[in-house]
Length: 219
Image (tube, rainbow, N blue to C red):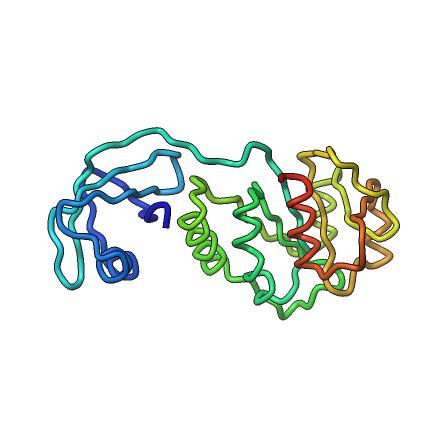
């Protein structure tokens, strides 16, 4: 891990649970050693010294606080029609590592309504990814209950669709980029498409399309 996540950084903190297990059973860090910590809110890197350790918790004191942002250079807003949460969860770390700035999950016409994303689980996955890749802030997560609501909130967007124009090499936009579910978009939804683009190659699964378009724009 590049750092440990701790939400409430202060002059003294107490580490317990999974973080305690990782530091002292996996990495076998000892008393008086230094630990890097971020709260994923303020772009500061906090350096703590381990004052004491027991089997359940450790007390750390702040040694240094330095402004050290590690953020994507460009902002990319992915709008992704809801698919099976298990498949979403597999791709989330990659989207975070690529540098997606915001993900709007949308219940489109062909999204199965019984699919329910758990925001707390999504956040946990993204936190773990940030700890691994070193990113200093979490992407923004939004859930919209229908494509109609999405079109009203974001009238200007790009849609990834089979009959769109091929994306140029240096294409970039901060407008949302809409990816369909497994069944694609309904004809009613396509009526709202003003800007349609496509990627080269074969027909992509929804999760492959999400990772591919994010890589195309950001990397």
